Length: 429
Ligand code: GDP
Ligand code: IMO
Ligand code: MG
Image (tube, rainbow, N blue to C red; front, top):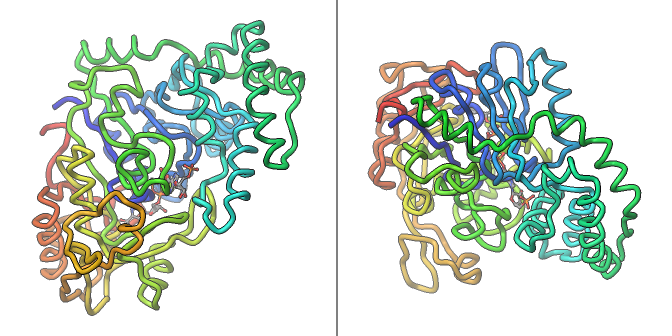
């Protein structure tokens, strides 16, 4: 298959950035197709650490990066990120970054509404990143979004801001938050326009040409299947579809072009924000995983919740996400643990389930059913070949493959780019 889509198979932060950066050496173009600057992808290359939120991770490899129409773009955040990576020595210009002209924008009003609603939810908050992702997607579906192409038409902007503010200022007032003034927003957008528009184009044309000329496209997912607005642990999800099928609609290419779907999962599990997490650990093992795995949000800085690998959940993600091979990351974090557990199902009200049902009550009540395995005392950190892995680690990987009914085709053993073991090249599958 010529193309590959990389998606998260848990609740995000599986190491998509590292894996996409590594695979990008085999690709020509890297495309973001959903999410926004709620994503935080960390890439470690020698002594440089890149933290990317909106920019496709392939830029670090000098590949062409495309931000598709399925992404919600905060223009200010994008320009700040470009400035940040430029300061680290990366070139970002219209020659290596293209943005879909039909992508919707995130405005300050969206972030304000996101935060006001979270505050109003109190103890029932979702734990969003507060960056306006949900409200921006709502506006897109409600047909009042301001899109990249609108920046070229001041009259369109003016009229659209009227409609947008009529809606949002009423909501903000109801939530006791400050309203926004049209003149200030318009001036801000008009000032940003000349910096954003040089990147804008109908990216579908470029992707079509790339497909026809046999160039390899790598689709970079953000968030993960369990945060998918349909298939995740709703309502504790993000506001976009994160499954691989979205790569097509979110960039303007046919579904057959998406190619091989590589899911990414950690060898354990983490979650940022609120919501069900059946295999969560509240003990010292959970703390140990968090400390060792440096589990602090790239975007939020919050400590991530940690737990055992939930094979029942990853199996579910494999099925709904169309995952054909799994990249297992952070195996090194489990080094030295005497005993490991793998979630294989749930006990809910006396019944055993092999999947997580959709109803929130059932999800909250789900008690994990575990299998226990012996750990390994040797270090796997930095391993670059299968032969360097302890027998017990191989057993753990093999058991995961059986339980999720999918092969593990790539392994990551440290944050560093080259500490990666490839078993099967997804571009050759
Ligand atoms: P993403 O959102 O899926 O791209 O993942 P993040 O970058 O938010 O979080 C993953 C974190 O784990 C980053 O800090 C990576 O540098 C780090 N990481 C990735 N792979 C490995 C690995 O195999 N071992 C260890 N110890 N850290 C890793
Ligand atoms: P990457 O791409 C982990 C979570 C938030 C919150 C929920 C909704 O780095 O894996 P939102 O701001 O999207 O409305 O928040 O989704 N969330 C993520 N968690 N990794 C991410 O991205 C996430 N993006 C959003 O914490 O629980
Ligand atoms: Mg992340």
